Length: 631
Image (cartoon, rainbow, N blue to C red; front, side, top):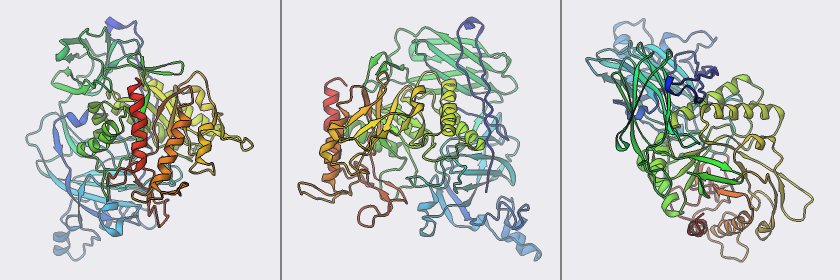
């Protein structure tokens, strides 16, 4: 197994400019891995070379490229990262043996999952090697980084035959510096990706979605000056002040002049980094600033200049907080009219290649079709293309890490992995105005080890980002003796969350009559906002049952389920948001009813190809009424 123990060293680094030393600076988690781990926040907007496109690949089901059959280092004939012309070497010396030839192996296009590459790979979970050559710019100045948007799950990277680094986690970015390894002319990059989950991974082996192995997000060679802006966070504080935190990396990071510039607002805020290359400043908001909202998703071109480096991003400014049972956006109550979705593009054969166009197609169904203002990106960090598109289109986002169902709560390495994923997710997306809620878990069983595990994640969120809300999708206890569905929130994690979120499937996974759902009784915390983070029922698009009591998997049953569940939800006084399950049918190997599922979870309001089901309009009508009522 390709494995890197990505340990998270928690170090609270407080920085402040001399002019603002009286203001507390948000704490920051620093990542400590075996190799140095640059953040490269906003990397997709930096200059570089896109390595998307044609790659060769080679399956390695016995992981012979990782170890010999006695556990020793792999034989040279199995080392797929070797910088060698295999055909020439074997033709010139009959003592040489290679049992691979990456340059003449099958070809694929990245980013994508190998599950859709060939029929024999449809359910393959294991190790695959990718390789290609590319030309590096010459002459080169400054520093060069290989940056991966994501690869699922364990990744090891080699450049020109040299080990570059390892990463664990399938949904967050990682980067390695390769300045000294690049050469003029052709360079060979080799990437090993192992998708096999274990009881210690996050998520564990059993889920309810497809495990798309492979390099599923873009790979780029990024160029920076020798000293560059590695991390930057520009936002409104909950007090309505404009704050900036930046970290420089390089030989001139300490005591370096920096400028935050927002040209459209006429803002030029100057400062100097401290001895560790950190800069923090806070000031009053310019009067001309227009706050970001779903109705007016205003984004500004923001830049930080530090020496030769010119970091930039497109950032919206808004505040989000709670007051009693209300969620406040820019100080005003808002009802979250949303839906959940998985990272699968619309089409019959999704491969998790989430381009901006694919993201717009999905989010357009939410914004324009459902009259939504909110989306839950389940059950893992989605592509940067998705969160940037949410910024542009004006959709609030719930973002979560795949601490899902039954992870190894008592395993310290699993906790370290989850904390690392959470940090990578937050540090990547803290500049996205759309993100309102960080979620730390979904449907996890209550026990002491789990409670301690998740409380640590909640604490990490608050140290990393004190400007957003924290939640988790929880379960409730049901009274088996009650004559009507009666649910009580007893999960102690709710005490430390800003928003109580509940997944409920009464009427689908229970024997309740749909007519009984509106009379459900809910015992919930009175002083916190509630989101129904999931509810739903399967329907196969086109399956019609017009009887008075339609059967499950029919479009009529799903529509009736939505009507009755919405009627139930709308009677709860603390309800402040909905993200039903789910926008689009998605792949799930656990769902194998041959008539209706065939490897798909059919709870989507649209089919995998985009066909709207009857329930789509039921939810759209409900949201249109809420929108007209100012909710």
